[in-house]
Length: 322
Image (cartoon, rainbow, N blue to C red; front, side, top):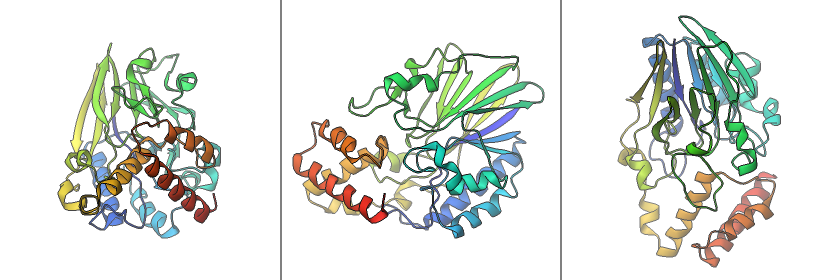
């Protein structure tokens, strides 16, 4: 039994400011390569860790072009919704989104809080858990943990959340692999954190985040990172193989840091702070006051930068009528 896993596609029609290339065409090329990999390796299923789209209401033209690729998928395409796929970090809004549309017409199969069973040489049960606001608060971490294992040979958990291999800033809610090692899942597949982390194995259980297949932020770690997918093979044991995407050009060719490097120190700090906010994605767009509280907790940020960040976020919310 073979499964191909990737995450955080963030498909959108327009290009992020940090990108130098035709971002949408790059997205299509990467997904075509992934479908070709699935065909070449004769995989039984493709799994996606969420944030297929960069926002829940991407244009019809974008969805149409991507749908043409999915029609030729060599195997079923299973997915959970990420925070960018839904409105207000609420998975119950999925039917009003473009990901919900793809699910309703059968091009993808949404696994939000549902399980599927793949049967072949062995039985692999896959359970999906979508992103939900507050899931990385300590009292909600049970969503990462599958408690029971049935007659299946292997249990796989796909979840979109801020799972990390090591602690980060205490002001950003996140979950550590060591916090959930009691899970019954043989493999926990996650996304959300675009940089990803080195595959962790604890007591024969795997915890995997290969990172986003696209690079949006223009920080140095993203410039150096090579987008990849994961090939899982289940038999007498579990084999994990990393496959780097050939269509992903070197970071220096597609990411532009000139805007950061040419700005004054204070402006650069504001950009770095925005990157931190983007990476954490740990706030509800509808609750500005909670966002203000999180920003205020970040002691290393100057007050002037905090105020400017809050002003800009508020302006964006007003323009989008959130």
